Length: 308
Image (cartoon, rainbow, N blue to C red; front, side, top):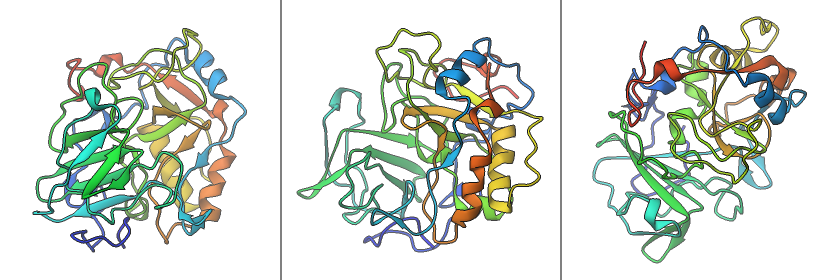
């Protein structure tokens, strides 16, 4: 299985659990991999959870099959060493990493070729272990046009410049926070999960680099906020796929990465997902979560490395 549509130069074998096409899913000491189960709750936790929606259900925004004619989730395209780079033009050029990007013409697009949503395109160069991400991406001429784009070295903890967006509102990479079938099938997710919230404030917390709102309402969550499923929440009755995801939400938590629907967690499309199992995550509600104070994890403001 490949989480991509057929594309010249795309890798045809499934990546190993825990890796991105054989590349690290960021370094092991990156904050995405931090165990937050024992960290103190954030002082504004109750306000943040309330504003996101204490009674709203968790939703796996990914699965098998099609929704409105397109795969469900955010796909990742893996390309082999030597994939040619192509030009990309950006609407937000001042905060985008310049091309060329090794994005095949047939790279998988979130929502499909005719989709009108965020249209993320995520490409992992498995030779260089670099991640190339585009937001609002459309094929154009011999390359692509996009709203914004970012390049991440998967062996590095370096963050984007302060104040810069990426292909995600928070200025973070998208792929490292996606739930992927192969890791759930292996029984363990070792990273935080990307989540969206209806409204956010004009603020971001480390490791985020960008805010996505003009609101000064301090009750709204900032970009980069870490949330976790409370330790006492009983997840024993969840089916296997949902339970592995819930276990990760207890240990590694969620990271607020964009504005969107409340408690929508992100993952890759895959024909092997059991949508009935994923729907059981809806047994969990906002009130089952709390915001976490991650300030003690930060080693340096411009690095994603975290203290153990």
